[in-house]
Length: 187
Image 1 (cartoon, rainbow, N blue to C red):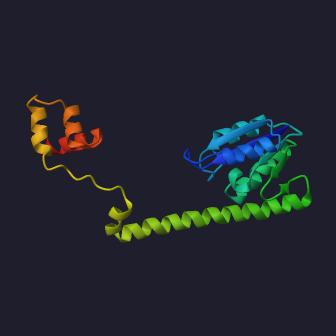
Image 2: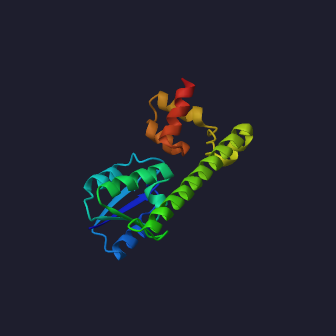
Image 3: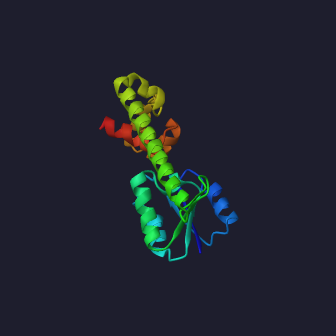
């Protein structure tokens, strides 16, 4: 049986490209995780590893969708091999039924791990730069909401019972959470 494994890092990303590939390859069973690949603690990956049987083939679109570091990749492949399950990565054209495929798997696994390290390094550099230059946070962060000049006047009408809070929120053009944040500050 051909079994597909699909992974995207966030729920906002699309699995469509990978799903189309699986359909083209005649995959009968597909497992989809919408979670980071930084480790193997992924529910659908675990379910797939429990499901596979001798003679099955696990197919992924690319190695980085399966594992992000060489150790995890090799451990997963070893577990599949112990079960008599083959592994195929379409992008890298790796097939673990051949010695060359096993070698290339190790090389590409190391490349995927290096890519992950670069991503983490760039992320850390960006955070460090922002900490050193807090004046830039406003430029890249969420814009601050300017309190309307008539906020206290409208809020006093709420306190007196003349207006309901929902009416005040609409008059002020604020989000409910922002309104209550400023109300809390006035108390």
